[in-house]
Length: 113
Length: 160
Image (cartoon, rainbow over all chains, first blue to last red; front, top):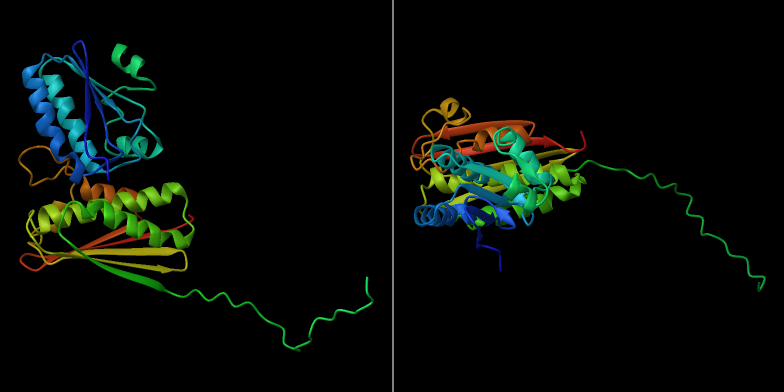
């Protein structure tokens, strides 16, 4: 079975979202609804996206990141990324995310950064 | 050694290895279902593998196909039913992929291809589909007619 679920992890005011193996239009549809729910029910000052499992991402992933980035900007929070592999890094660069969202190698660095 | 002389049979014909650059093709028809986005990109990537692409080139092809099929599902058929036709050809070092639908079509192709242009009002789609196809393939051509459908033809030269 394909990996569909996003795993969420709360670390104080930091929400860590573990991204799936493949992130396209199909398997990113639930993410908006789920994060909206989490953001409305919890005080989140930072969202950290874990891409360490992700081997494929297309512009659907860029849509998600841009919107969470704007959402956090509005509430004075921030967004960070860690664990991105080559394919994801290229998509982030072409999608213009690289200059907006700081990238880290480990979760600890991303949460602290 | 048993003293038997081994001789290659002499046919008198010198074989010349003729590497003909034959055009190879494939066609695929899939239902307009978002689950088929990953199916389509994997099929095209496997087909393209006969051109001996690098991992990066395979990723490029998968991304471009994913974008084109997503467009057919989201814009062509607007989430409804329909068929998406994918054709690929490998000739020499060039890969050609066409993704076609018989859906809504695009009234203004030039506008649709502008980066960040999106018809999605939830703000969840980036509007970068065509920009991604153009970034990862060498050539992208779009044919579309409102009410008839859209066909996106992309070419990529494998190995530089």
